[in-house]
Image: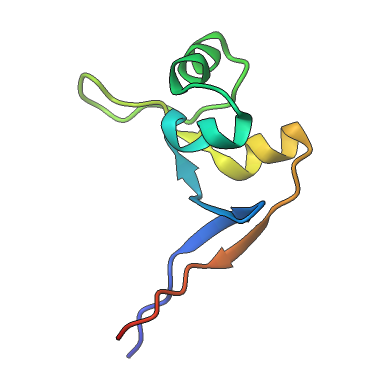
Length: 83
């Protein structure tokens, strides 16, 4: 039995998980992770509910963010070549 490959969001040669942290999406936006976090807190960037526990990071649904920004993307299987 084979395990399906995880899905990733691919845009401009960058692969991101379906749900990412501010630091992961900052390069696409051309901004620092601090400014992305600040936009998450003010509601300018869509986020999913935080997981329990203190220090939980913002969870950004990448495809939704890219849709809102008009950035083209595709969702593909993350194929890792085994040696």
